[in-house]
Every structure is written in C-alpha cells, then in structure tokens.
Image (cartoon, rainbow, N blue to C red; front, top):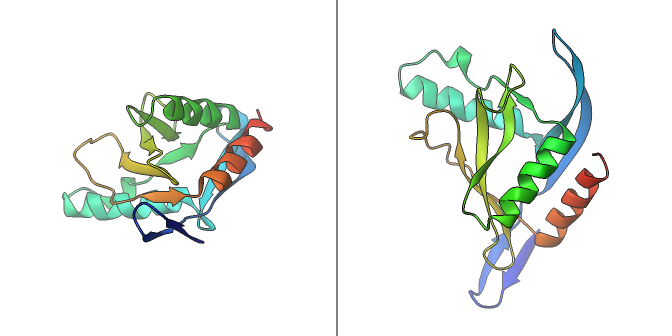
Length: 154
C-alpha cells in the first residue's frame, strides 16, 4: 500500500501488521500469546534471522539467536499503548525471553508517529550496540485497527 505525503512529495510504502492468538505451551504452564505478523510473516523468525547474522558477525554461536516468546495480548497492548503515549521517548518490548520474562531478555522497539505513518524502529535486544536494521512503516488507520483488534483480546 502506498500513500503520498503532501508535505514531502514522496511515496510512503506501508507495511502490513496483524496478529493471531495461539496457545504457548511452556513446561510450567500454558498461556495465550499474541503472534505478530508483519507483511504476512511472523515477526519472531525475522528477528531470529537478524540475530543469527549479528551473532555470526560477532563470533557467537548463531544457534542461540532468536530465543524469544510472544507476549500475551494484554502485555502487548499495554506496552504498545505506553510507547504511543511516550511519543518515541522510550522503547517497549514486543517479544519476551523464552523463559517468559520481559526483564530477562526481550526485543524492544521505539514507536514513532512522524506525520502520516506509525513507525516501529530502533529494534533492540540485550546488547544495545547491535543494529537489527529493521524498520516498519504502518498506515495509521491500519495500525489503529490492529490496536483496536488487540484490545478486544485482553
């Protein structure tokens, strides 16, 4: 989907965003998780591929990359709402550690709204120096639909 921003006269290529609720079976419990899809692809494998590249580049075993879980719908909604309220001044988790704790390890993003776009950018894992090179631009109306749909699942 493309949109023309009249102030800049450049086409904005919008990414798509959606989610599905799945049951995550951990060894100690089962819980619902919110599987995020960007451009029709699950986001966790996208993150894992980027981390494998980063790990290999830094002499680490790529097998340890991408060991995250999805958040619950409630957690994801609260974090993304908070990020929106902070106007890009903070990063929030979109994935948690495989142990199910955000504080242990997580993938965080910065959410910005510069004009007619909602941006997920500045992806960050535990090592704040690593550059994931990811940035997603969402149509604000599509993003609002995503958030409203997410809110109905909490």
